[in-house]
Length: 307
Image (cartoon, rainbow, N blue to C red):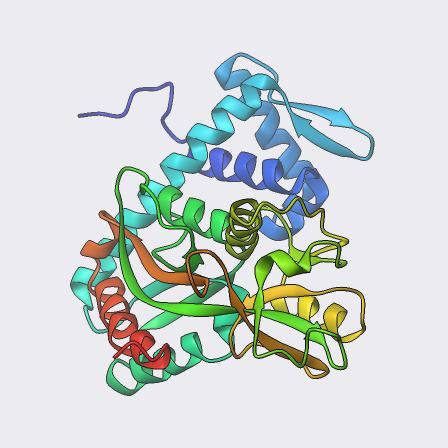
């Protein structure tokens, strides 16, 4: 079927619009795209003329999308993702031992789990390239769902997955209470979660899997705790706890120098978080993606002590 004139030749302009939408600055977008700023501005103006509505408006020193611009950028991002997926699949079919895989994972998994799995991948498939992305659980799940990532290694509350996503549980990690060295709770073998009421609390920021789990545990324990500090990685949580600025929850074995890990108990026993691997039904058809999926399924449970 022939492409109709309304959309013919728009792919480059749509990529430019998506970049401007992300950066909210035409000059920065031009630098990233490798084109002169006047060229990008003219291209965006032509795109506005093509669709028949303004797509951008100035705000301060930057730009923001109009309602029509947001509508088109969202559709463009989906289309670009689908085209990129198709190109990767084609290249994978012609070179099944190579290709690119995009893997997302939470920060704390970058210290041991992911490097060990990638070493195993490189030993067997040295030509497969892996693009790594780190972040919170919610953004990582969204990235797999939208096609920005092929695989995501996350630890979060189990629940219904979005349509098109597949998950496999690889193991569980015990959660412990981090307290500063010398803290009154540091000498106990076990501590009931309810005992931390009134303590200054250090937590991950909303949107991170550890925060979701922590909030659920606190509610189940009947505690209303407002974090004194919110962080975007567990290393910072550990550093703040070590400085005596509060207590926090973390996976066992991730404590920071100057902290003590204390075993936690709740009404349901020892709290844990579940580590799972996510992928989309469309991306797993790529041989390199399936290969890394299989490597992670084989190596991560061993590292978690589940086999």
